[in-house]
Image (cartoon, rainbow, N blue to C red; front, top):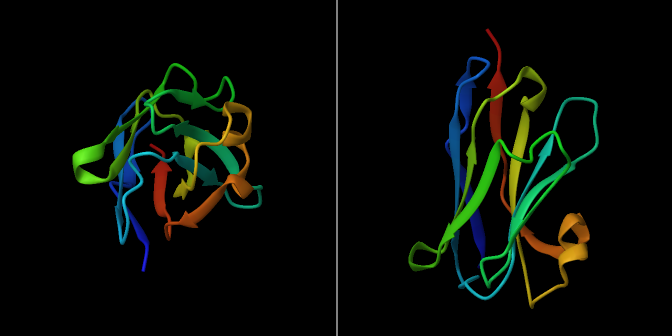
Length: 127
C-alpha cells in the first residue's frame, strides 16, 4: 500500500521560512515525478512545484517562483519544498503528490498526472 506523508507545516510570520517534507512508502518513486499542490479556503487546488525523476524542476506561477524550491532525496524516497519569504497569501493546505511513469513537463501542472496523494499539511502565514 502506497502512502505519502507530509510534515513540516505550521504557523509562521510573514517573511519567514518553512520546509515541507513528503515521505513515500510502499514503493519507490525515484524514477517518477513528485509534486506539491496547495489549496486555500474557498479556492481551487493550485499547482506549486514538481520534480521529475531526472531531477528537473518546474514551478507554478510568479507567486512562488524564486521563493520556493523543490528537491528530493532518492535515498529517503522523500521530496521537499523549501518556502522562503512567506506571505499571508501562501496560507493553504499543502498536498504532496506522486505520479507514475515519466510524464512530459507540461503535464506536471495537472493534478490528474498524479496517482497518489498525501493527506495535506496546513501552512499559515500571519502576524
